[in-house]
Image (cartoon, rainbow, N blue to C red):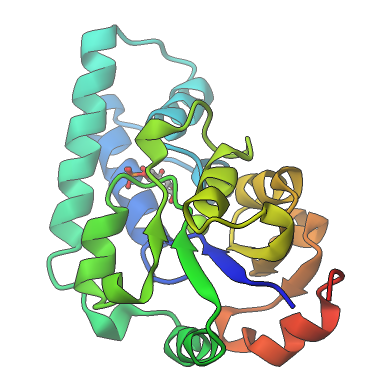
Length: 219
Ligand code: XGP
Ligand code: MG
């Protein structure tokens, strides 16, 4: 049986992925008078703030100075934080409360492996900070998702081998990261690129210990 679960945050624990993309869209509209297609959302999912902006600038085919790049990052985050003002326990995604309770009952350790620098603040708003034994700091790992670093750091913070952990993700960059870390990957969502996961669930409502335990290969 696995001993730890390494959670992504946006789109797995909280319904915040769309808020991120809304903030990116607003930024691009304000600064470049352009619209981002919904198809770009998957490419900004799971990746860091800076990498998301690179994806977007690349799509727009524009280059900006370093100063402007930093300004855009700050402004995007201000817009995003403003949209979180009323975030609360009600914004936990379906099934998350029950799944976390089940994991705790079985003494399985929890770590956060999010690319977001806002992770700790969001866990506080969702009243979930105490449920997590560790929060891996994305600013302290050399490479962001799709590199495996944040999942390796999260397992290490739990004093576990990634092989003894399950990673849960809603983004294809995140699934690639889990797969390369050695943990067992569980994807939640319907995007075709999530098929690279070891286990694919249509939504967080399907997360439960028995389903994963039965499929987990290192019992
Ligand atoms: P942070 C965020 C990115 O801004 C966003 O584009 C990604 O989709 C998200 O992380 C993935 O979790 O990072 O701005 O909250 O630090
Ligand atoms: Mg995510």
